[in-house]
Length: 261
Image (cartoon, rainbow, N blue to C red; front, side):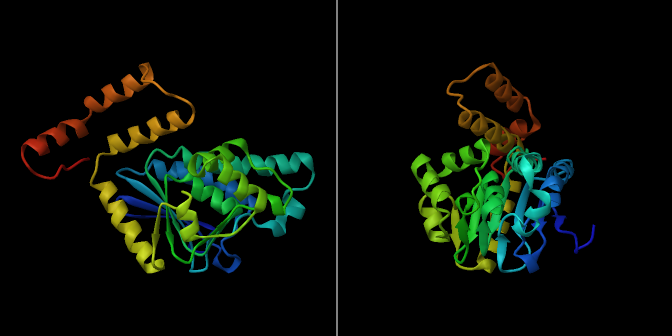
C-alpha cells in the first residue's frame, strides 16, 4: 500500500486508521472507493490485537466532501447503473456500522453527503470547531437508503432528520453537536487529534468483550429489541466466561488496573 492510494489503512499499536486520501479533491469518494471499503474494513477487523478504528480525511480541508459527482456521468447513469452505485454506498456504510470494534470519525473541514453518511455509520463523531456538516440529497434529486436515513434519525430524531435531508443545509460543528450529529467538539484540528488519541487510549485500556457486547446490544435496540431474550442471555453468559471478566474481577480485588488482552 502506498500513500498515493485513495484509501489508506494504517496501524499504530492497538488503533487502526482508515484515511480517505484525496486531499486535492476534498477527499471526495469515487464509486471504486465505496466498493473497496468493505474489503478494507474486513482487513482491519482481522488485525490481531486491534482495539479501535479511526476514520479520517487526509489534509486539513475536509473529512470528505461526499461522493465525487464529477464521475456521475459515467458511473451513475440509468436505473441499473445508479442502483449498482447506491448498492456500493450502502454496502460501505453497512460494513462500517457492523465493524466489530469501536469506530471514531475524526472530522475536520467539510463533512458532506456520502462522507457524512460514513461518519454517521461510525460509533462516535469527534469534530474540530471549524468542521461543517451537510447531507445534500435535495440538491441532487436523490433519496438516501432507508438504513442510512434510519441511522440519522436515531442520532438526531425524525424532525431534525427531515430538516437536514429536505433542506441540504450546512451546519457548524457547534450546531451539529447541539442536535446530536457530533458528540464532542474540539478547538482545532490539533486538539481534535489529541482528543481522538486520548479516547482510543482509554478504549484500549478497557474490556474489548464489553465494547463488542455494547455494540451488539445497542444495534439490536436500534433495530427494535426491547427485552432481554435468549440471544442477549447468551451474549452475557459468554462475557462471564471470558478472560476479560476473570481479569477484571481479579484486578479489582488486587486494587490494580486491569490488563485486558
